[in-house]
Length: 136
Image (cartoon, rainbow, N blue to C red; front, side, top):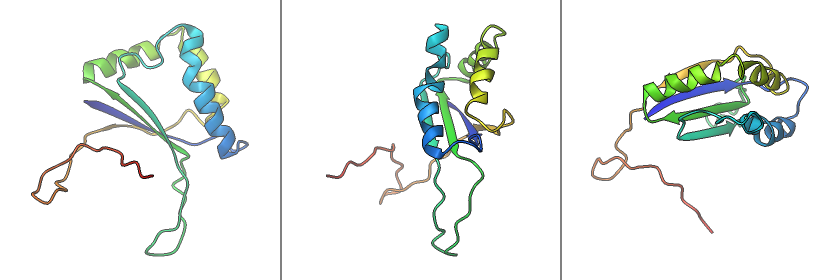
């Protein structure tokens, strides 16, 4: 698996609800309007919206400066690189950049490649695949 993480700030004139609504209901569907895959070869695309909360040690609230962390997974670096070339396509790029102006504070967003290492969490030192727990 190959993973990319992007950090985004919403436009300052948007509320968090407006930002989330536009991202989920318009921006993530932009490629559909262009008749292209949203993120070519990606196997997972997740947006994580951030809400600062109190640090339990200091009692202070520290804002990270970002409103959303976006994560995308591919099966290989080659799939990632192919995807990046297609996203940069001169026919597609102007539409993406124009739509992002309606959403993000800037196009200068930190983007990282992530190398993950799991720590043993089980009683016998085993690692677990993460599975959400649903409580009723």
